[in-house]
Amino acid sequence: MNLVQPIKDKELLKEIKAYLKESNDRNYILFLLGIHTGLRISDILSLKVKDVQGWDIFIREKKTGKPREIKMPSELKRAVRSYTKGRTRHEYLIKSRIEKNKPITRGMAYVILNQIGEAFGLERIGTHSLRKTYGYHHYKTFNDLASLQIALNHNDIKETKRYIGIEQDDLNELQRKINW
Image 1: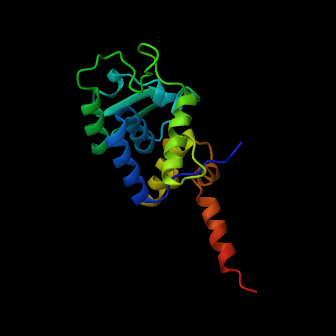
Image 2: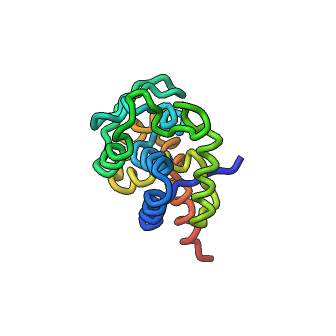
């Protein structure tokens, strides 16, 4: 199994968002939900229109069974509002084009993200990259591992640092400083 990485470059994130906004609304919303909420792909795929009609998303995480409340930032809320206009409350947000009112599969989400990766030269991208991107930028913005640990439902700060790649960044920086 390949270790996927967060998308750390903010300019690259902007380019990907612009590309998706122009090319595919569903994939744009999938991407925004991942990078703005930190939800696992299984939780994103289970969202319906009714789950995103207010400013908050309330879910029970599939993996942990824990409840989670997420306030949508303005960029995500505007995009979701536009995307859901005229849709029924019980429609899945990330709907399959093949089956009637079923979400895309996790495998299809992986294919979509890999296509994005190929288009933008990202080698280690997968469904967890969106969640890791959220975590990485949350940490870089607030420098608060404790709140990020809670947001990601991790049991340990070390797990959170390793998850978002900060631990590896720290090791790489130390390695660069070695000068024999």
